[in-house]
Image (cartoon, rainbow, N blue to C red; front, side, top):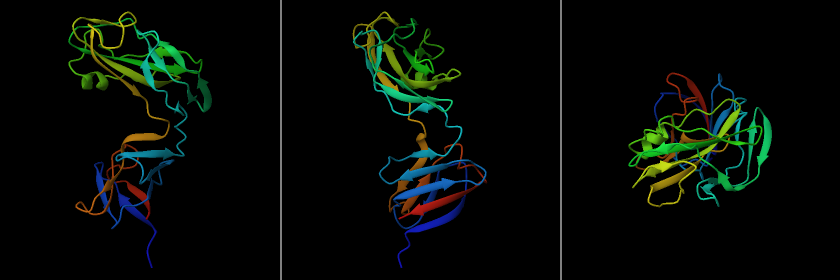
Amino acid sequence: MTKYYEKRIVEGTGAALNVACGYIPTKVVISRDDVVGKMVWFSHMSDATALREGDPTDSAGLLTQPALTVGTTATNVATEAFDYIIANVAYSKAAVAAGTAPTATTVPDGTWGLFGFEIGADGTIDNNDAADNDTGYATEALAIAALPAVSGSHIMIGYMTIQADGDDFVGATDDISPNTDVGDYNFYTTAKLGELTSGGISQLDSSSGIGFTIGVDGVFNIDGKDMVVEIWR
């Protein structure tokens, strides 16, 4: 008889951990006896992703994601309508087509800056930027690595990275779209509540041993800690 469901105890390693099961599962659920909540993955999801379910610490975050774009006021960052939760209370924020102005900080020519946007229960979109925008970062990756911690009683909506090229870029003064002061820019939206964008589950192909890989999310795959792994075919 074909086995469609199985449960295993797998010891965490603190590193990416391959689990061979002879097939690509349709669903994987990982839990630990000493952790509230579960990691859930379905086969249609991207590699290294998962969902966190039932975690009482997940009381703040985005319920829906707003796309960030250049505002109708070209110096600003526009946001679509979105829903969010803070301290287990849900809120809705209307679209801001004209956009929210970035902080009036000067990013030096030839460097990158990161301008972050967060929101509190009052519905006001606030600025929260990388600390060294005024001296600039050599690469976009370094600017992203400097993404600040969210302020108390707020959630991060997303952020804009921007490269000053040809002249300094002055936040809230210069247009964001490429011009004589901007070489490149990108918008990034924060993941939805409960959504892991790294450290989740990945498929393994037949050359690696058919099954899946458990990533390192810092909660479940801990060195020496047993995980309960449920697998559906």
